[in-house]
Length: 127
Image (tube, rainbow, N blue to C red):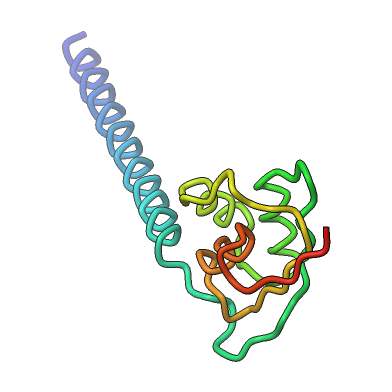
């Protein structure tokens, strides 16, 4: 009887340790992913080196930042549309985008594109 209680106690302790190690592993992995995403939000480079290529982008009235990010990703202006959406929402221009057609370049960073879309840089608008 004592041996079975001791074996059960050892098994229980081993499972607890295994669960704790698994939880620690998941937390470390999630922390690494969060850090990488946060780092990319503020340091994401342009898709191409200068001179890049010009791409026309239409911003429509009522377009969400997620739709805009997807459109820029489709046109290969940004690597990740969701990351662009986060960058836009964290910028000072989050609610200042203007509808129109803009010429963006693959050598621009997301921050530079956001400034153009908010009317702060060179633009071609057709309203």
